[in-house]
Amino acid sequence: MHLRITALTAALLASGCAQQPAATASTPSPPNPAAHAFDLIHEAPSKYFTDATATHVPMAPQLHATDSVFVDVDNDGHLDVVVSVEHGVNRLYRNDGTGKLTYVPDAFGTTARDNEHVRAADFNGDGNIDVVFVAEADKRHQLFFGDGKGGFTDVSDRLPAHSQGNGLAVGDLNGDGHPDIFIGSTGESPQGLQPARNLLFLNDPVRPGHFIDASASHLPAGDDQTEGVAIADMNDDGHLDVLLASPSHPNRLLLNDGTGRFVDATQQLDLRVPMETREVHVADVTGDGKPDILFFNITSNNGAWEKDPQTRLLVNDGNGRFVDETEKRLPTHTFSSWAGTVVDFNDDGAPDLLVGAIQVPGFVPLQLRAWQNDGNGTFTDVTLDAVPGITVGRSWSMGQGDLNGDGRTDVLVGGWGTQARLLLSK
Image (tube, rainbow, N blue to C red):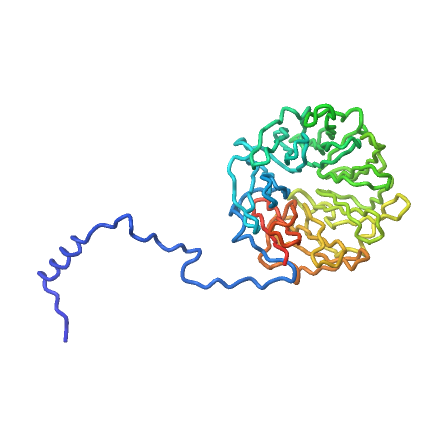
């Protein structure tokens, strides 16, 4: 049988269609293509980490998350995350106790700056966590006092000087029980490098939370050009010393006399090759109870191939000298590494390494690397076992701590123009 549609029938059908009620507010929204009509196939798990980014981190795939610290800003017993943002406003992510992070807008104001690093301490002695940020291009460092409820007050006017800041560390450098601030400075300009001066702000013991600029009186004179700062007791005298990472000069060691006055002891570093170092870490990787040094390097700042970006390991010889033993202890690589972090991801008591990896030239995001320590300071690349395959980005400085309360260390991997990623330990 053939269906015949006459002109009258067609008109009636058209009329009926025209009389259909218009869509109302209750009409379902179109399906979300990110989740509609397919089964989620989970990434093959790693031995040590779950990449919880999609479920636990606010999505910001083009954010320049340059650094982070894990601190309990609201005294609820859970570590929250403070993020420094390059070319943006610094961020607070509140933790619900399971590691799931919620963005708190405008916690640190609304002014965008060229923020490079963040550190935290109780600077004013009120029992609440405060945070300090350093900025590069606009040279406006920021200090915020926490109220213990998750709120912050801008007290940046208490910082007595500014600079083109890149490195940052906090610690009690003069032994008075109050945290001080050390800022690494650079002098980049369109005309080339200009002389730069690191900054040392000593916390005023009479008025905690106010700072005295001791840069000229307590630091060696010279052109600093500092990208990274680490504070540790490097000569076992009970005083915190300072290691400086430089993009253009040899890296430096400054020894503390206990009052916060430093002398240059760079001659104790075995600096065998030119490096463009972006970050420095201190850890006892050999298990002998003495601090060793890790320099994370790039070939160039997203330019052509220039210097060897191989990560370097300087081992403490026990006599005050740090000997470069990179070739026999670290995996070789040609990717650039703006940052890494020290974490015992396999729980064997020996510090392992997570190493950021970016292909330069090209600025291509790569998978985060994992190097496992044999307990004696020799590392093996175990990336395929330790890092989920989805953990890819332009990895920048990494924050760490126990976000989900399971007693294990979790890691937030900052990303420059790529999504910051959260690794929850298993």
